[in-house]
Structures are given as C-alpha cells and as structure tokens.
Amino acid sequence: MRYIIIGAGAIGATIGGRLAESGSEVVLVARGPHAEALRADGLRLTTADGERVHRLPVVGGPAELGELRPDDVLLLTVKTQDALAALDAWGDAEVAGGGTAAQRLPVLCAQNGVESERLALRRFARVYGVCVWLPATFLEPGVVSALCAPLTGILHLGKAAGGADARARRIAGDLEKAGFGAPVVEDVMRWKHAKLLGNLGNAIQATTGPEPEPAKAALLLRAVREAKAAFTAAGIDWASEDEQAAARDGKVDVPAGAVRGGSSWQSLARGTGSVEADYLNGEIVLLGRLHGVATPVNDTLRVAANIFAREGLPPGAMSAEDLTALADEAAARV
Image 1 (cartoon, rainbow, N blue to C red):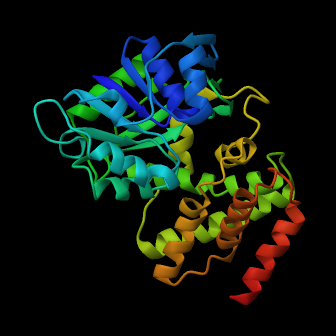
Image 2 (cartoon, helix red, strand yellow):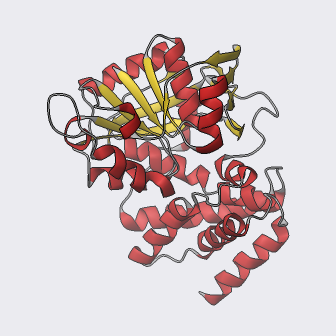
C-alpha cells in the first residue's frame, strides 16, 4: 500500500515519516512555505528516538501526482475546516483501471472532532475514522516533533459507519510496525467523541495560553459538562475515562515541556488564519441547539478562538479571568 498524507502537518508528517521509516511508501501533501521546505530540505522529524531527515515525494494536489493506484490509502490529516476542499479535490482524482478515488480508495479521517467522517461519507464509499492520541509540535516549515514514548502515538481505527474489516487490520499492521498503537475497533466514533471532550480545551489554550491555571481547569470542566449533557440528549455514547486510561497509560508518555501548546494554539502561533473551534466546541453547540441543551460556555470558546484566528491575535493574549467572565455573561443570557 502507498500512503498519501493529505496535510503533512504535526499529525500527518509524524505518521508519514514513521511509516516511511518502517518501509511503507509515502507521499506528503503540503502547500506554501511548508511544502517548499519539505522539497528543499526534507522532513525533519524528531521522535523519542532522535531526529531524522526524510526525503519523501511532496505534492500540492492530485494533479501533481498523476493517476492514483488501486492500492493507495488516503490519510486525511488537514484541519476539519480544510477537509471539504481536500475531499473534493482528491475524491475526483482518477484511479488506474477506472473510477475515481471517491469510488475506489479508502480515506482515513485522522483529525480532531467528528465532522470529517460525515463530510467524507457524502463523497467516498470507503471511509474510516481514526482517533488520534499523538501530541506533536509543528511551528516551523519542514520541522515536526512528536516525543511520546514508548509508542509515538495511539491511533484507534475502524469504519466510520461502524464495524471493522480486513483493510483496517492491514493498515493497523503497518501503523504498528511504524511505532504506533493501532487498535482496530468496531466503534471508532465512540472513541472520537471521547477525544472531543478533551479537545474542548483547545480554544482555552489558544486564547489564554497553555500554562495550567485553576480558572482554566474550571472553565474546561464547565465545557465538558455541557458536552456530556448534549451527548446524552442526542443519544451519543463515548468511551469512558477508564477505557481511555487503559488504552493510553504507560504507552504514550510525553516528556515535560515537549509540547508547548495544542493544535489550535499552534495554528495561531503559525498565523494560519483559522482554528478548529467550529468543529470542536461548535460540535457541542450544534448538538445543544438540535436537542435543547444550553451550551453557552462552548459557544463563548468557539467565538473567542475564531476572533483570535481572524484578527491575527497572538495565542494566549487573553486572561482566563476575562474569558470566564465572557462565558458567565453568555450563561446569564440563557
């Protein structure tokens, strides 16, 4: 199988680099200065084993790669706000022997949130979800670090519509060979909903900084309570904290200070102009509105993170107290 990494950022470059190290064929998809750095100097990937430079094929889109192969696997690792454009571009690509990628090839949604699977299922016949536990840092073009040990990350995977199959198990085998835990599960979206609860704090990190403070922890707790109420009202199950701990503990230990901030904080630090908040906190807001659950904290976090991204504000420029005050005002209006 050849792995086409659509979005070779923190997650995509780490998975792609590790797969290449273990002998898999890999193509990186990137754009802008990051693509230029990857082409000129290779991917500088640092893991717990040290730094390596991977000189891999880099393309900006399917036209540069040419006709796709029947054994290609599309690994979607762009942020969710960029998923639709990527799915449309790659879904229409022709595959050797006839048909398009959307008709013939598997696409794995290795992203935060739960929306990309729904977007993909509207377009692709073979969609898999991937629940990503892989703390990684991408702040400089061409340079990515992922320092977890003894495993580089844990990637639960399964069919987005439920179930598992032989293809998922073959992909899992390649990922395990590359240094990841890759449990194949029948209920991958249940794991992704559990991961979403933790990602509700991404907006807090982005706006107030990643340093731990009691006020931030209290605000996250309120956001998670709203999310669990919305999940319950919608009839959505999620993996328990005990299940998650059993899957992670002792397998993906992160050295102190290895990851300064999460994905949204890093997006602001790189000045990308957008964050995932509409598909993290915004997912909870959507469920709340559909099922009659008030979600003022999550809506406040969503709006604040988006303002930071649009206006180019530096990550961490707001105090936790000011963000909490905004959430309190929103709650008082409910």
